[in-house]
Structures are given as C-alpha cells and as structure tokens.
Length: 417
Ligand code: G3I
Image (cartoon, rainbow, N blue to C red; front, side, top):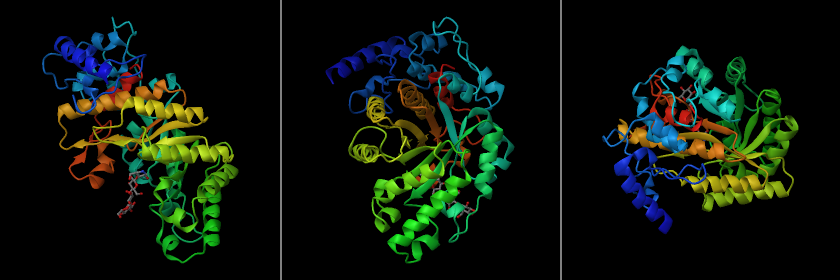
C-alpha cells in the first residue's frame, strides 16, 4: 500500500510532466490501470488523462519509450482517425514507433500481431446469419484468428427436440472459420441457461438425464471432431442450475470425460465469470478444477469470461490467478471480454476502456499459460450488453459502423502494433 501511495504521488507529479510515463509497472507487467483515476485502493496511478487535457505529449515516441504496453494506452489519442477495421487503413493509421527503442510499430491485422506472440485473438459470431453482412464478415475474418459461435452451438440451437440435432447454423460458422484460417472455440456443452423447453419440462429421471447429456456431448463433439480446437464443456457450472440440481455436481466430471472420448484432440475448458481475479468465486473455480485434475478428469484450461465495466479486477490479481492455474498445469483463457461503458460513450471512458483492453491483453501475453484472448463480439452493433445493462454498451473494439475504437488500438499496442 505505502509503495502504491508513493507511486500515486510520483504519478501525480509526473502527470504534470509527461503522462505517458505515468503508468508505472514492474517487470514488463502492466501496472493496473485504474478505471477510475485515483479510485479506492491507490490504483490511482492510472492517471491517464485521456481526452487531451493538453498536458499529454501525444508523441508516440513517449509511448514506445517506456516499452510498457500500458503506455500504448497513454498514447491512445492516435485513435482519432477511426479507420475502417480490417482494412489496411486501420493498420496503416498506426504511427511508426520510430525513435522508440521498441522498433517500428508492427503493422497488419490483430491476428498477425497476435500470431507473432503465439496467441490467438478471438471474437464471437452472434449467429450464422450475421455472416451475410459483408463488412461484419470482413472485419471478423480479417482481424481475428479464432471464432466462437456466440449462440449456434448452445443446446436450444443444436438440440431443439428430443433426439433431434440441427447443425446447419454452426456448420456455417465453422466453414467460415476454416475459410479464414481461424480456430474454433465450441460454446457450450452443459450450461444452466438456454436449455430447450423439452429438456427442462419433461420429468426425466436422473439416469435418463445422464443418458441425454451423454448422447448430446458425444453427438455434438463428434460432429465437430477435428474442427473445434477448444470446447467450453461446462459453463458457469458452480451457479447450480439445471444439470447440477438434476444430476448433481458429478455431471461435471462426466461431461469432461465424454467430451474427451468424443474428440481427444480438443482442449477442454471450464468457463465462468467472476473467476478472473482473486476472491471467493475464483477460489471456488480453482478448487473445482484442482479436484478435477486430482481425479484424473481430462481438463486443459479455465475460461475467464471477463465481462467487465470500468472497474475490472486488478491486473496483478488476474496475473496471480493465471499463475496458480498454470501451476495446476492448466491454461487460462480470456474467453468473453467486453468492457461496458455508459452510452453515449465519452472520450474519457473510451480511453479508460482502451487502457483495460491493453492491460488485460498485456497480462495474458505475460502469462505462461494464456494463449487465447477472445472478446464477446467485436462490434458494438451486435453486443449483448445493451439488452443486459440498460444505459450501457459500446463495450467492444469496433463501433456499430465497424470503425476501430481506442480499445482496438489498446490491443494493438499490447501486441507491439
Ligand atoms: O436467434 C433467435 C431469433 O431467431 C429470435 O427471433 C430472437 C427473439 O427471441 O431470439 C434469438 O435468439 C437469441 C440469441 O441470443 C441470438 O440473438 C436468444 O433469444 C437470446 O437468449 C440469446 O442471448 C444470448 C445469451 O447468451 C443466452 O444464450 C446472447 O446473445 C449471448 O451473448 C449470451 O452469452 C453468454 C454466454 O453464452 C455465457 N456467458 C455470458 C454471456 C452473456 O450473457
């Protein structure tokens, strides 16, 4: 705390000088960027004065000088030219990092920058019908190297009637991914939500439900065998709900074993929200997956959904959580990131959003076991946020007209772009 206090004081002094140097972080680790400057626990060093209060140098060299990806954020103002994403223009608007000591800023789409760092940058396709929008398809296929069907692989979509499976929509999603050289994250095989009425209303016995879940996982995973790189096998499973209440917690072990049988090459994840940093729910997820590992259940990683507002968990807590999962031999993937702001968004909030995207991606890059950074959508045009959080939105790297937002450049800066 004392160290942080002097950091804040230093930060304030420096802020007067050259804000780009304000963000103090140790060892390449991005300092937490306070989403609320000066807020609560002394994370005030995020005194990024977005929106050009005149005391920022707006000099990319600054940005590059510190080599601290967070500084990418500080220099964010270059996002003034909302070049159309996925076009060379977006990359072309990148200032050269000349004189930065970090070498020229890398060009190319996000996916190319991420590939250099051994990471996949992903985004969801809302439903296969979204792909009929040429600009939507161009940005998704051009900027991202991993695709998650946001809804087309869920129970209600693929298993609409008892014993009846519909793969038309997810097959289109997978075909799109394959034609754009994208990996696929399957989402999801057992969840408390979005289950079809027939499943939740017919009074099946426990044994019948075990049979139904087994058949579903074998059929769905089998159908996409060799085409899906990662599966969210169980989603938000600790929240109780249908499978937990009707079969018991052991459904989780069963689901992972059956998914592995159906496609031994696919990486299997337990995916949840509120498990990103440290704390009660994150500890519960940690204990769950440690137990699975101890019982020899085939699990390969934990998904950290990361649906945030401008007050995300501290980055050092997320880094510590990733490290302890790594110690269990598990990957930690950012699977559903979005950062909601009040709408219409202020330049100040968009800059803070940029800092959060930048910091979270930098934290993933710095972790030994984080190879996936995926957002829940990519354009504000199809985000789930406004329907779930009235008055909020603008949570994604591209706006509703597919223009790149500061958040997009925050991600590029973390990737060296
Ligand atoms: O496709 C039908 C359309 O034919 C119909 O006209 C329309 C009106 O009812 O509904 C459409 O389906 C909707 C679907 O999204 C596609 O837009 C469903 O009603 C709606 O419930 C569904 O919401 C999704 C929600 O999960 C429930 O599955 C959201 O898009 C999706 O963003 C959200 O995603 C979840 C993750 O799976 C798990 N983590 C949290 C995340 C956000 O809640």
